Image 1: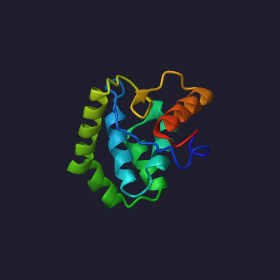
Image 2: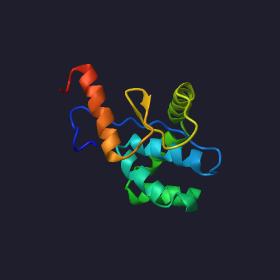
Image 3: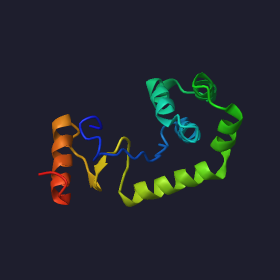
Image 4: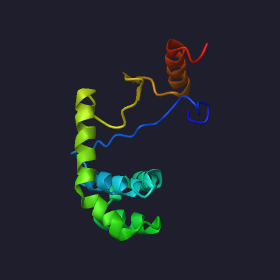
Amino acid sequence: MLEKNPDTVKIVYKAFPIRSHSMSLPAVKAALAAERQGRFWDFHDKLFADYRNLTPQKINQIAVDLGLDMARYTTDMTGPEVQKQITRDLRDAQAAEVNGTPSIFINGFRVQNRSYPALQAMIDRELRKSGKKK
């Protein structure tokens, strides 16, 4: 979607740690700490590659493997700014009536059909409404 719409589509990630996964909150905190070093998506992808087997040690190993500044990573992961971001994101999710992941919205509208053609049609419709696409 980004390749086809580089000037009009932006992905915004919101943290939504799920209660049913014991490592969800630590994983979110770690990914947000990695974001502060410009490595969010790399970290995110490695977390999801083996999300069923996450442990605190595996999460920290991802940070090491990505070459993060570990002192800064640890400080950010346990710091108040990361927790504030999670709280803010959870509040946004509640307001949008999100109850699971992944949830996708385009211009505030929840995506029901996640197929590529349906997503592109929804993007095109929103662009037409804004006058950016004919």
